[in-house]
Image (cartoon, rainbow, N blue to C red):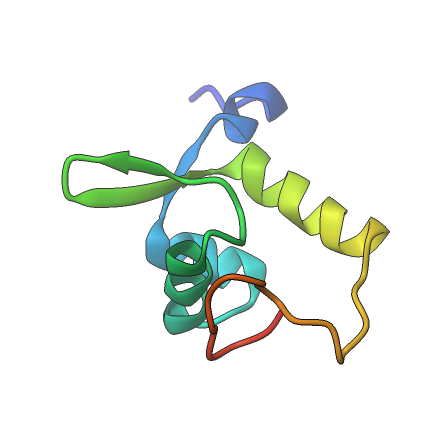
Length: 84
């Protein structure tokens, strides 16, 4: 049995629930972020939304390198129920 390479894992597509679990957040939060136009990049495939693993990693790296102050808004154009 051939194990997936690091490169192939980076291109793996995760479902909405898998992506939320990967980020350690609830499904509601990842949906709120997507509706607000914030959060990790996603792809809509017909009626499904998927997240490339490499984009989840990039999103986490962005959060680690550019943390926001707790008083800063998560999104400037839409109200979001959950913050980062």
